[in-house]
Image (tube, rainbow, N blue to C red; front, side, top):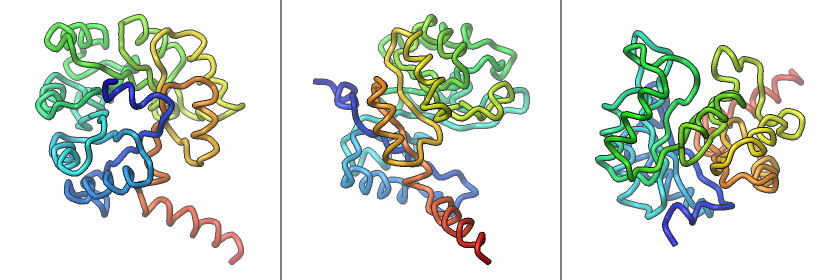
Length: 230
């Protein structure tokens, strides 16, 4: 069984800290990944080749790799160009995830143009589409992405106000019914019950990030609630 097959029906923990966050450190992300493994996680989602290199020193779990990088001429920031693809291939991640929304990439390139170029260069690499709408998920499925993700629901202008867990994951159920590639649930799945539910609905795996690995946000959820009585 390949590492990726080990992800089926299991939890993937997103271990990320951007440069303005208190846990920003490749060493810390490695320890975070180790803690996730000890808790039973079967995979890791991680940002930057530096963090991924450190993580692979301490855990032997399949990794969904991304590189978040801003470009002035595009709203796309999750693995937006070939430069980020090359960096991720260099650290041998099992799956590379990229923004698969309908926004233009740097240089005015469409998703189709970019994905075709990437597949030509790396035909054996597995790719995950980070989508924000049902329509984007269907299109990414038609393009041939190996995994379809709900990662960006609510994070793009045309999905503003949407919530992946609304109405018992209605949007996710629609995606599952309309695509043929495996679906990985991700995005604001912030309770164990929600994680279990998306797997019950038929998702291949579930990614949980902030609810596990961003202590500043976890703390804030407590302090916000306490402030209601003051």
